[in-house]
Length: 144
Image 1 (cartoon, rainbow, N blue to C red):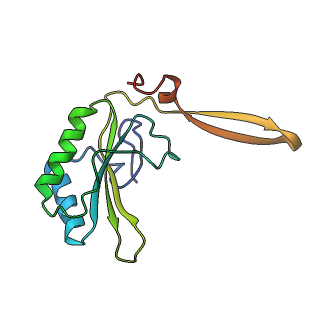
Image 2: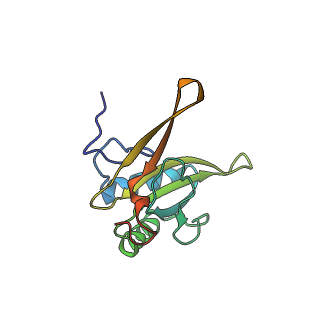
C-alpha cells in the first residue's frame, strides 16, 4: 500500500515517493529524451488539481538533447521560485498532437497548506462539494 509522505500534494508521477534527487531527475529526463519527447519546466503557487496550466519557465526544450542542460533549467527555476511548486513535463508529439507522457514535481514549498472541502446542501437533500486550495487565501506572490 502506498502512503502519502507528510500530507503532500500528490500530482503527477512519483508523488507518493520521497522527493527525487537530481540524479534521479536526470535519469527521468534521459528517459524522456531517449523517447524523443520535448521537456518543459513549469511552476505555480496554486497547485489545485484542476489548475493544469502552470507558468512555463522559459520555452519547451524541443531541440535540447542534453539532460544536464535541462537539469540546469530545473535548478534555475528552483532558484528563481524557491517557494513554488516546480514540475518537469515531457510531451510526445509523434501522433501530430502534443500529449503529456510524463509529469512530476521536482520542487515544493517548505510548508504545503493543503486544501479545504466545503459542503453545501442544495435542493432535494443533495450535497455539493467544492475543493479550494488554502494557498489561494492570499494574493498571488504572497502565498508562501
